[in-house]
Image 1: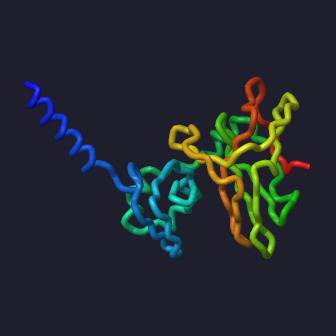
Image 2 (image 1 turned 180 degrees about the vertical axis):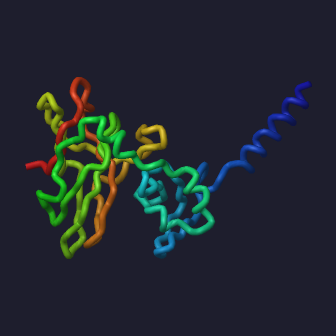
Length: 200
């Protein structure tokens, strides 16, 4: 009887290994993006509507869907979340944030979404040089007036939970747009976030 259970257990382990999808369920040793970027020991950790959060040997970063090789495109399309419909977004009180009016460090930003876990921000580098952006450069204010400083750049999984913490310094090339998820501390409990701005 014990041998039968051992045989079934070995078969299940082997089947699980065969069913694991490289890059999606386990790391691939080398991922070469279509722009030539090479990420070693890369594994997907989260999905947004425009980019994918990838953890690799050197850290973690967001990668636009179009930069993945063709062999991954069908699986990525199946996992890509649908964009938020305008009607659904209008039902919540939208954060009053700058939409490019306030430029600092050669960059402007706009808020994409606000969840309990993080604020998704698109940062536009409008300067002619690389911009180094840190979470401490931002501060959120709740509707009750509480100030919440930016603490970490994070990546969220498909359930909206933090799955990876990114490097504190995020570099944005001249003319590029980076989509990042900002965690503030402490998390707002009694009142939702109303505004996000550059820290004075």
